[in-house]
Image (cartoon, rainbow over all chains, first blue to last red; front, side, top):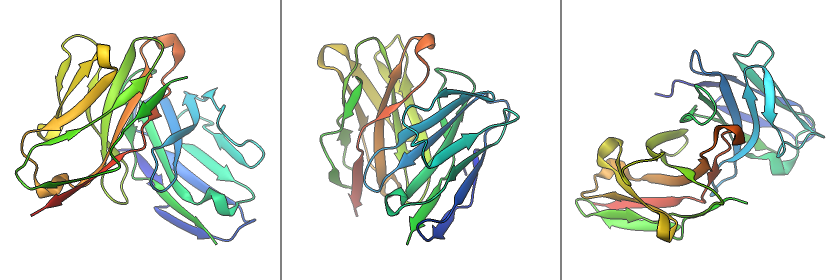
Length: 113
Length: 116
């Protein structure tokens, strides 16, 4: 069982609605990542946090996506408004620090109708 | 820009047979290399990693991988496959220098089917 906790496991919503995902990393892990995995492809990094600071959000569609890690522990990824193309698996990962192995949660499967 | 290629989208292997999954990478510096496995509907589990040193690395579940710098490859092998090895396998590359952060670039994955 994954040690990185994510919720919900599944989310079905209509386009134009808002959706949020939550991630609780392994205790003590300073670095947290959000990935998007489209069916049949490898994961792609959306945003990386070091403690509460964003290290890399170059691939995050900032017009509709936002991410926060206010206290440097758990994190929330939000999409508003959702589009059909956002249907994917959203994976959270954490590591002790930069360049340490990443440990993944079980993901949230998002379906946009 | 860094990239990872997994040439085989699907591989079917008989239970008990050997397995080799190919991974080629493009990277401008010394890379960190990883293999992850993903069962349907689940997250990714780390199988093994190469940072430096011995180019043949052992991982969990009986897997091993060999780093060949001259071929820019990091192929994954298992001598005898079990039915539970049916899953999708991802190769990933990351920067070796700490200052460069820890952005992993993943290949497109290889789906392994195991025949009884």
